[in-house]
Length: 249
Image (cartoon, rainbow, N blue to C red; front, side):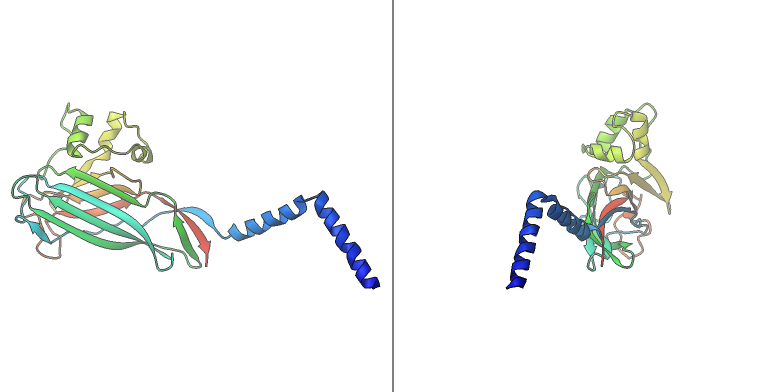
């Protein structure tokens, strides 16, 4: 009986303390919450650029020659998590369509691993843009994008087939849309194995920094083998850094 009386007194004292200072319990709740999220952390990661030739060989329409008529090129890259959040893969689509009769057409799809998560961690979420796309009308092989005195805005409008580049993409490149001198740096050309490679930014999404693409080659354009030499192709895809949420596993 004496023991029961002592326990009752202790209980009453505890209840009184909590009533006077409910923050005691609340602070414990905060500690528990922090403990639950301590293993999650946001970080920027650098994906591995896709630095290999990717060429479609499926002839969907017409013949294998664009004949200097475009092609109109579209390409898109989407990220996905794989292997329980320990890998990041890029799914790539590409199409090229001749701009006049007989509208020779080809397209292809590929998947490439672009990141391995460090041991002991996994990615819970990708917080930045997970996709990018671009499109343009490829001029004939050997073209010059901007001629002396040509208006930059009009050149962009024609080249991108009337599509605007999103404002946030300009911001990622560190330039202002109205800075016409800087705009010229967004589209460049180079020679790769005798073909003109067009380096072009994404028009939507801040995942891809630059697509490097061969449109017209000056000969047969759509590949009929697996080596991609002298064919319409993706030469390289460069990525912006990506923000992810890590957790321990």
